Length: 613
Image 1 (tube, rainbow, N blue to C red):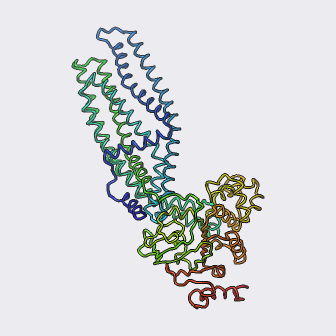
Image 2 (image 1 turned 45 degrees about the vertical axis):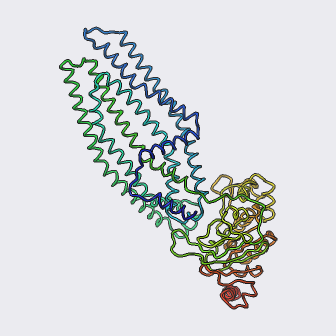
């Protein structure tokens, strides 16, 4: 399943041509319209109706203008006031109605666009959070995420608006065509010939724009990252301490230079094409005007019809250009929304992590091998480990030995590339089942910029509003006292980036994360280097607290500090992705292997007076 997901992401980026067949284009437009319908059906239908009504006014106004001119310029020289008056009133009403409808439609579209973008963004969020965690280690997946986020935010609603504009422009065009055809049908082919090159260039430009944006996607992501480094609170200290502002700004400027140069080359390429296309159209239009004037001069067209025909021809040419612009503008959004549509179809990781009361007697990793998507060699090799219920199992090893990767497999966050996970001796492929019975406290746990209550409640979303359970978890984890003392108690936002927010110390954040993990109430607890940022005494105090906190549950303790694992029921040593030793602390010391050497090396560091001065 995971390999299929990764292959799909790469396949979606393959192919030198960025164009969609007509049937697929219609499907993408239908998808965008479907989003708008789901976002606000009544508002969407009303916008369509208003646009349709407005589109009929152009042709009607042209015919009314002909009536006015006919009343002014008559063959006998008489002024027909009633004809002129009725025509002018008709034109005024059409103009007023069109303006009013346009304002109403614009107001409705603003809200509809926001609702459509919100719905599309939610679909992207669903797809990203449902995707297998392994995909986050593939750069192509991040390109797809960026593209989908971009499409959801900027293009999903825009495509709906543009296609409505195209449809209404076509209707206006048909109205003008009908009016001109009644006066001089032979002008229509000439006008189509005049507009054809501009239409072709507009379509080519939009395809090129999409290709250019894909080319710059990774550059754009790096730009955003550099800007975050310069503006984020978490990096502000180091940026100032190492005087990084200028080097980072220089790198940001270099990335902008790449984007600007690419954009300049792109616009220069299409500028001359567009000038040639417009010049050709203008020459054809001049020839058309000359033909109409010649016909009027020879008496084949009366003056009123000739004037109206010229106005209609100019109006028709303008509508063709408007259609060209709208149709061309649709090209890039269609491709982006097509990518969005494909992205939200990426297969999700099986199941959802719904907390459950079920447990296991023994959870076993049987000859597990794991390889990251972009890697050639496995990070875990033929690993076997057994987690009996109710025991504390320690997993030790140097940084980079694969400890966290193994923890992610045991808790259902990754699926192994080879080997089997056994639940009481039975193979288990349902990773959601593993996630439902496990809780993980990572070394780099998230410090949510939310309230204290939410920071804890997110450990169990179905208890997010259960304030009593949240306070009990905080009390058990030793976080209640300092959370209750905050300005708004548990409702204080834990970030100074928001008004009335506060930040916590590292130790306090550890307690909050511990409370979040405790609230989940899972039988398998994975503690992945949870005390790496603490000093040895604080670490020892926290582990004493943890042992009491999770008494009776299965605890997988991951660390590179050997002093904290002496009292574990079993210790497994992971070295370069392989289990090299396992046993109790005493057994491993007696074995005189890598564990004994590393334990004594770390112990000596604390006993050496030179180190402890």
